Amino acid sequence: MSSGHDVSFTIKPIGVIHSPFASPGETPIQPSFAPGVKGTVELFPEYGEGLKDLEGFSHIELIYFFHRAGEMGAPALLRKPFLDTEAHGIFATRHPARPNPIGLSVVRLVSVTGNSLEVEGIDVLDGTPLLDIKPHVPDFRAAGRMRIGWLEGKSKQD
Image 1 (tube, rainbow, N blue to C red):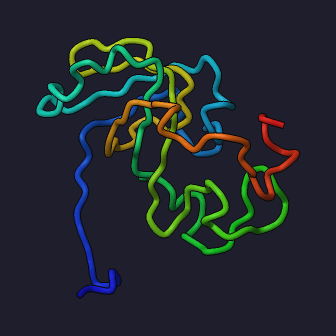
Image 2 (image 1 turned 90 degrees about the vertical axis):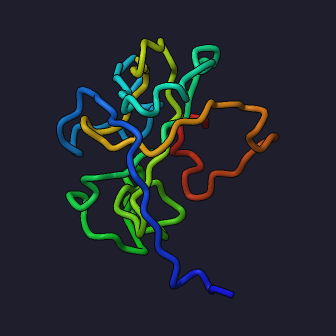
């Protein structure tokens, strides 16, 4: 049985995300910091059929590759996040320079036209490779009051 250390795999993008942000420094740190910011998600034609029935959801989850995370520094297990002055473990942050630079954003779905989605609340760089889309279903998330660790008092939910 494999320990997981020797497993490797390839993930191919299914599309590309377009936004008004050309550099990491101008990109909002989360969708909640990008109200009203519009973007477009373009699926490659061979994946278009997978958009059937998506228009019935108000929000979607975009899973993507931080293709320019190297501009934020080399991956490190301790990082000073954007909302704090002290370093935290990378897995206690949402910093893009991670061992596997994968991002997740929940955005509002405005419209579906062919292989293209218009979204709002986008917080990713223009040209970001899209790995997957999932409908956002709040009932599938943990319920009840959640703790947010070192972000207490720094989050918009406070």
